Length: 336
Image (cartoon, rainbow, N blue to C red; front, top):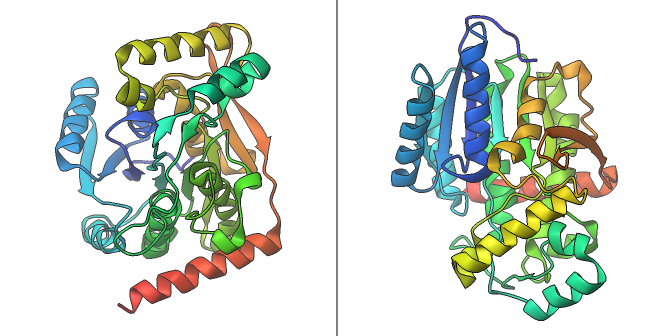
């Protein structure tokens, strides 16, 4: 695990005001409260200042002796990312953990006919994939980047490059990407690496997350920085409730619980369960971790959480080409 001494470790978590990011913060603070030699300062890196402040208050109420800070960042805006990193470098003299967790799954509407068909032909896919979420195609940020790509991949990549020197001070820094159990190479196209034209930007961006997380080790391990990819299983989100109301949201959650009872180990459902793989990668000794695998949160039928290791369809040549493309993109923004 991270070196346990009286030096306060610094953990930055993007998208930490809710969901898996909030679960990661809870787990780290809970671990720190039970292990006095492991002092940690959790930094909530969030887009909305009000929600971040509420999350901070909730964490401090739950863990009264905890150290919790807030920084504001909008990962869809590269200028915002640069400003956030500048603030972090002014506030902290080291970074031990960087959780690249924030992300978006945009939804135009839910494909109910598709859901009905999957329910009849492949209920497992219905409960574990995002097929029935019809995503918008062609969305771009003000910077001209693919929206999903910017939020899920490139904003984090910029943070890593900007904060690399602070992470190298740790001696055992870890970059932990929250990917997805549904990430798929089937939707990935290098010519459309910004996920603008494909019909599933989310799963494509999460596959990019997987290969970038692994590829970064070639560059960063010599500086004692280690990069990993994880997935939270299937965590209940607000997508259904936002589009179809609380009744359908409750039905979705019932379906997830039934799937879990029937043996679908991906049905983690809660953010606390979903954050387990991130926590494990953050705290296990580095020699016990395999940087070429994806660590996933899983549950047993009655809710006991555990983690497993997943193969990533990784090809070094493709990964290197993608890293080079991201570097060129970053250089263009740095010159502006």
